[in-house]
Image (cartoon, rainbow, N blue to C red; front, side, top):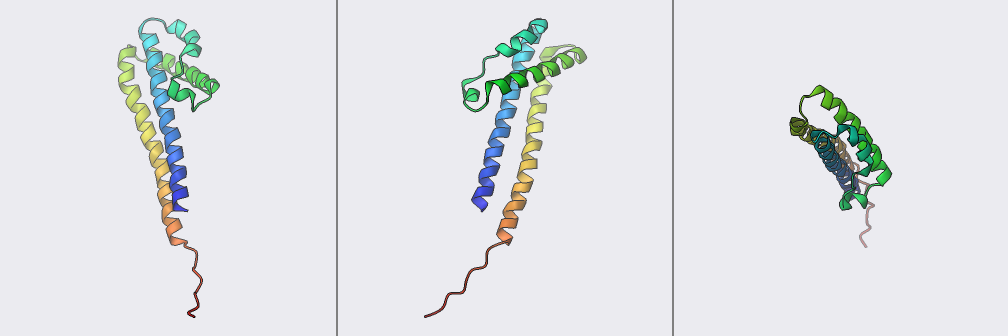
Length: 131
């Protein structure tokens, strides 16, 4: 039971980490577009961002496009709030990884609890007859 618990944790952690890494790359790409003065063209270019080879094997490209549009809206809003997009990446990347760390804690706590519970709920062994 314990290997199954940790296997599920590993799979979920891998997916969560991939999402965070993809988010950082998409944000960096959008901020590069915004920094070059192409923010109006960024909306059109959001669908043209090349999906990295390591990401294409794991994620549906349609899902990546939806994530690009969501990040584009966020970057446009942040671009209006903050004066320069070059300084924006300096705090967006750590924010994404802090969110990743909080998510990992939220995955780890139930996993440890299930590990402990699986150790406490052992199945009783049958008595062997000495013969």
